[in-house]
Length: 267
Image 1 (cartoon, rainbow, N blue to C red):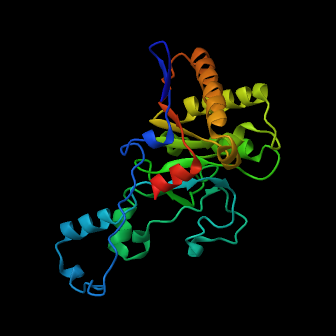
Image 2: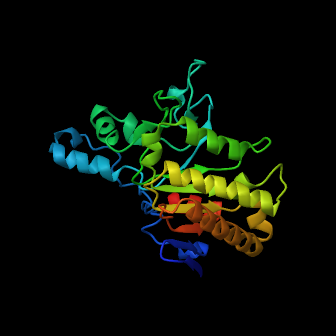
């Protein structure tokens, strides 16, 4: 494990993938394999005390989701076809993250789920069309097809989404693809793009508790060590620059984690 510290205000951490703490990326335990004698129905559930039913609904909620952001896709979730819209008036961010199943069981489970998972990230004060829980979800900005599309999408979301919803985000994952131009890497360009991304985080997301930087999958597969060392230097320099430009910002801890490890940790 490596660490970098610059003064009392700047503390950034680069951790190997296996060093992730359970408290940082919680993963739901795998259910035991069902047997032929396992009951599949519990008809007496509605007769349980309300407080017990609510506890059961809460236990059925996902602990941590990796919520990938996308601007203006027609379907808010690949797992929730009923929320797809054919109206051209829809504007906002969408995601292919699984929607909590409790939203579709009954009125009671839905009402309980909406206490923590709320529609978010619509544009220009319009209602959001993706469900997000700031207390547990990780917002992910991944690679996109097109000239600097990943970087453009990030800045579009930062400028167009509801400021109060952005301010509630606690954990964010950012792909290294945001700092590449047409599949080409230039250290000066990447440094500038990284500074701009971190500046937006300092302005829009004051509640951040962790920033996760994700190497491109092709780089992680061919040269993982060199890629993470290069990313660490790039991030450290950008953190130092933003802290000098914004003295009041307290940068959150950061880690470099492969997409495979991050996805597995989120279940």
